[in-house]
Amino acid sequence: MAGGLSGLTTRGRCLLAAGIAAALCAMLLNERDLLRVAVFVIALPMLAAMVAGRARLGLSAQRRVAPRIPVGEQAQVELAVSSQGRLPAGGLLIEDGLPYALGNRPRFVVERVSRHGTVLLRYPISPVMRGIHALGPLVARVTDPFGLAEYGRQLAGHSRLVVVPEVHSLNGLPMTAGRGAGDEGAGRLRLGQGEDDAVVRPFRQGDDLRKVHWRSTARRDELMVRIEEAPWRGGTTVLLDRRATAHRGSGPTASLEWAVSMAGSICLHLLRHGHRIRLITEDGALLAGGGEADNSADQVLDTLAALQTSALRDLAHCRPLRDGQDVIAILGGCTAEAAAELLNSRARATRSRAVLLDVNRWATASEGDAPEPADAAQLLGEAGWTVVTAGPGQPMDAVWARLCGDRRTKLAVAR
Image (cartoon, rainbow, N blue to C red; front, side, top):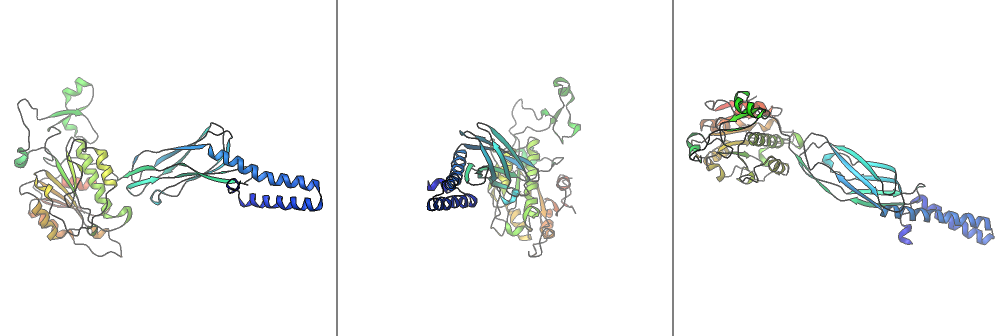
């Protein structure tokens, strides 16, 4: 009885107390009519508690949401609330748990869920920060029509939601990127008798129309393009500088978020064009790529969604840079000493490119100044690197276009 009455609201407890007081008065005064009213007043909240409790036990729910959504895009979360009890459920207050980064907690008032019926509820989410979030738990509060009793129940647990960084469309490819061409690439080619140096595949958004293979297009009745390298040849290593001391700003407008978005855009762009990629951090830790199973867009985006900053203060000696693959480095605030350490990690006469972030332009008033990119850019440029300097608001396709420019231009500054 105590457990059943624990769900009574303040209104229900007051009504129950009034009924008990009326019953005592009726017995003292020997008023049978007052006693009948008292019995009714006492029974009403107890009956409401029983009905609300049984309706609560018959409730269940399912949450459906896309497991992966990009930053800034809107998605729908669907809740299917069902009643399997003997009594219909009415007066439901449903609240779903939502992280702060995804917005305010959604609340719904459902007047009635019929027996063996289902009510569909939807609410939008529009994440502004990448990360791995947990939706839930989904809690329902069941009340009776008079508001005398209320019970809470968890209808659904947590759902995993991966918010991946925003990916921008890029055009063009770096000269010999991942093709195995050149002195250092020739040793990596697995050329054998009868191998073809080109492949034909369906046209994809961003492909050069000059590479359309008209014979295959006419035969398959589908626009086909000719790629001058086999997908397994060569490869590109994308280095992402995640040092906390090398970045400025906070939240979605931080320089690290720009770097993560640029790294994801480059990796997916190269994958779409049949290149094998490897995504590493400044200390050589492998984030994605390096194997057939790991060389996928989803794996790259999931890894970048969970990326955290590093406590390193300087660029460490990065052994994976010495294997001869083409390198595209996305660097935060970088001193000349850090650039020299990067050069020591990189084999000479190999094709290398770098995007240097002018992180001071991301800095807030409370943050200290970071190294200017000029000295590091000059040192890398003199060593044969193609260097582009970028700031906040810089279009990533413009940065990529400068990075893919003439390899004789060793230092290109994008402002």
